[in-house]
Image (cartoon, rainbow over all chains, first blue to last red; front, side):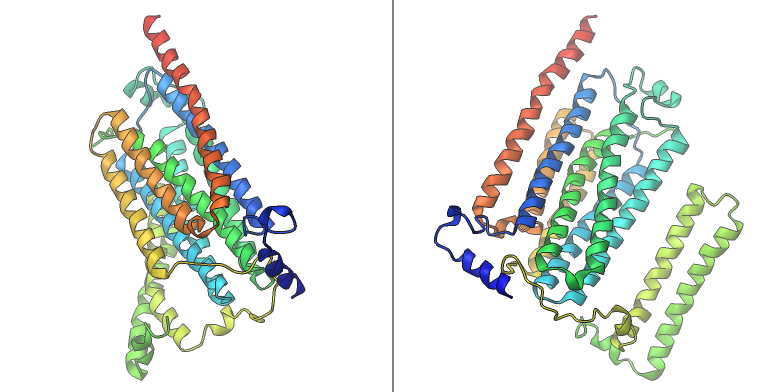
Length: 224
Length: 193
């Protein structure tokens, strides 16, 4: 109560930068999450630039993703993430109206989207590992026949980037679950911060999906 | 929610019973299909078997939506989802500030979905790799901007926050591009070997 009054008072102070106020008009937790997001964005940028570096400097690069199951699955995964971002916005909107029940339900829908993404992605990994025999530093023999002199680092880049992203999605689902469980004790800002993290995971996938999958489409898969 | 599905809640007596019974029957059928697949699939952890399980459970879930909505309208589920003490006051560090309507967010979502489908279609038009890379990254940047501006609420924050975060990020990513001349050099070196 008094904290709130204090916040309002400091927000209406005349000078933002003379101390004791919120110069960005966001709480310290939210600013912290933004700074984390910026640094994590640089981690993913570095990985994607590293992948591009290896791909550009290689004589050949495999293009193994057939329409079924890889492309159709990754497209559905993208739609899942986008839809879950939308449900997260609705959760934040409900939380801003102090409607915690609705917020909890929308967060549940968001987690469902994330879990669908994870299930499809693990299926896709298993398909590459079991059906093709892809390993981080070795290409399957069949791929070397189709793309002679292809870089053996394909698996390393693929598993590193999509694996780190999968880890982020899993963390996000756990984080959202924690917020949903304890939503009675959480401020609106806490819900908003978890939303920021979730949208960031979605945002990263918007670059991983075209760069990893859509630039390696197999137009004529063997056996078709 | 309650007004939109009011017609469903108003179905009385027999009609309710028949609708829910048919839906539950289908749902049970698909669950049975998934279970029988577990029993007789042989190797359960194969692509076909997992696919059948996933599809059956998905269809069962879809058929469960109507009975679930009926139960919700009639207050049967309220006790499960109730969050007690909803009006418990929690001190906010900063006054709550939220802008944007459901319609706006839905149209942003629509744009994002359309751009994604355009990207996938583009991947199947065989254009030169560099041109395709440019278009794909361009479209992805538009999508990222939409997510940042509307979903992450950055459009409605103070500009000082945007100026602190975004230019720094863009400059750092541009600094990473210093790698690319070297990768082209490596490719060229190999050509002369």
